[in-house]
Length: 466
Image (tube, rainbow, N blue to C red; front, side):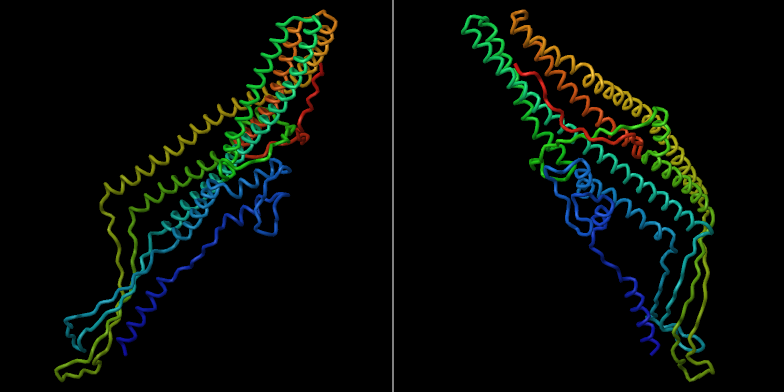
């Protein structure tokens, strides 16, 4: 009976140790649906966002957040790090020991047949707490790196989306100007037939048409690479068709350069992640010092004693034995322990210095991004408020002068060409401003305060018609 009891205890212990909880659900899918909802999604269902001609930038961001594998990988690294916290804070597994005596040892009360032992190791005071602190800081760092990955992904989507918008506007502008030059070429041919203009004017118009047609084809061929870049962030096949981006967010933000530098030092998730990793390295140093102290192991042994032989029949015949035990490890290899402490200190110093270097790099990158943002914003105002109106006026004046014979056809073509370049430059400045604003949000690590949110619709192409 006693043997059956021992076997039953062993079986229960192994059963409990082998039990695991299986869960095949992907937590990121639900997290992304709840966190990045959109007007184009179904909040109460698992239906994914669909991108169509009505989808704005927010829909693209929500789609990328739900489908990008790199972001999901960062999410899983964060969740995996969180699951290490209870593991590190828990006691080591207790040890169950079973001995069966092939050659029984005869005692006064009978032979020793088998022994069942249970022991538990208790780390030195403070060790488990420090292990938990290290794991908690590393989990915090992974959460912040997930946030950094999200900001980087959103920047990549915004950057490609703005480029896609600019390509759409460029094609529309070049097409419109091509039509204008084609009409000018017809006018030149008509006037050539009536001997009111020279043949070289017709040739110049045809050359200009050829240049514009070549430019238009280059822009049209650029659509596939830009779609591939945007599809890569959305985790879609590279050749998947995307509708044209016809709206460009142009938020009116309110900040100073000094505010941006302060926000970056306080909110940048990469810097905060490195702060958490530095704290983890500091806890590891304290933990290495704890290794100078021993861990304690406590246990109990139960020995099954059989009935005595030889006819002695003592009063306690066959009485089982119960013993308690205590042991400690002996941390006597001081060179090894001291090396562990020094290693931890070096790693702490390295983490501190790496964080300082990253802050310096971020500062310089942010200053350059601020310059490009202000430069793009200045150009937006310059082209839209000054250069484009003047170029429009110049085209009208040149056309009038050409019709009255006071200007050459070459002057009219040059004026039209300048107007085209100004239109493209204005759209380029709008796209650059939106791209640099997205970069600033990524570097700062939080939304930039808005003054008046607006959306840039497609600008009308109102070049004078010859």
